[in-house]
Length: 361
Image (cartoon, rainbow, N blue to C red; front, side):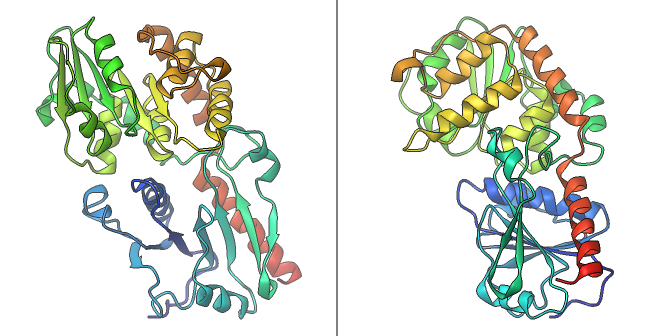
């Protein structure tokens, strides 16, 4: 049904298509929840909502989840329309937007990248049919980007968290002398090599559903000093707590990468491979921003099957955690000092609405 009248900028629509292992939905859900926490009414339209059953089983006050498309439930569109990752809202939505005297602010929330084009492209307009303008909104790691998604109070919650107690409460307590690692990866991860490397020290490896568990269940020799536990699907808050509790986190995609950064623990990013090799450029740009110790950067390159001269490197031993931890913690502090993505998005929308009110669409 149509929305009740709201104050300017109070109603937001987020459109999302689920492409890769629900990571797109995870980002959109976190953004929707953060906007709702700031007093906005949010509708999240997704073409596949199934993952929310385990990702966010209790929902969130202020966030309505809608099917895609769900006409006429979206009529009229909100004061702000976000298309996540260039997914293109339904044509009927765009037509309704263009028919307004004062159209909504239309944002294209792009994928996270550390590449130089992000600073050049963030905030640029893209004229659309019907007199509409779509604005590119790029997350990023520098002050000239849209920032990173970070909930209010996240850093404080992390600081007072008791990781060992939480692991024990889940039935995953570390044994004396064990290092604890979480594993979230793609199917081509070099897990056999990692397991052999981990055999040098007692290790608890917590494998997330799907690829990590499929790999860990394949016939291979697992050292006696390594315990592998298969985890259930975790809610988003519990996945954060998992990352906070581990000595090292293997992550993949955008959402888990960002959560690993905020965890402040050493992490290894498994980047999504692209047939044209573009993922190597993206990974290089990311590592330049991260300023990881050289041996940690080398390990991340090798985990992704990348090496110099097109060679496929063997997996080195894990680097020492202490300098890696120090670098990650410092980078997290630097990033947390910048305005977060939701704050910057709200400010951008307010500026565009004021400009439109003063000059017309």
